[in-house]
Length: 154
Image (cartoon, rainbow, N blue to C red; front, side, top):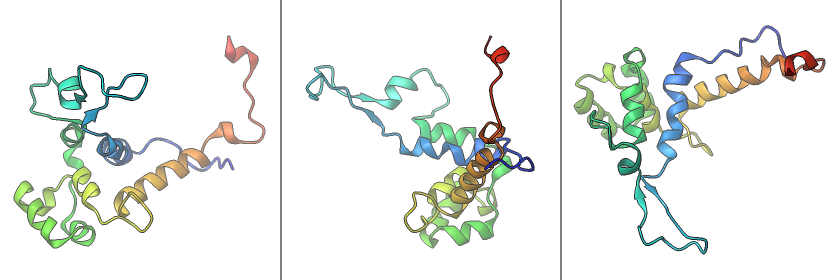
């Protein structure tokens, strides 16, 4: 239920890193089919050709845009990187970022070992769980006495 002491504000880490997880679930191909479910004569469409043509940044899809939009404020401390990814991946991340301390939080979050029965590792799971619980528990409209005044509808 509603708890007045809970701050439901959107967390910066959630909005700039963890919430972008959804970008990793979008396929690279947009299936275009007719009413019977058959591919249309023009064929399917690559997401990068449909939505990222005008970009001159070199971004080739939502995942690369998500990495480009993550702030340096959320580079991952080396100890966290070691705890959540495999050694072979640590080597790749070190090559990409030069030093493990500069590893992008979005990239490391996607690379985490998934928790049992989850699509997320510990970092994204903690952020998403915290944010959604705070939004739910701090929602005044969820309190039993909340009503919308007729004047607010005008």
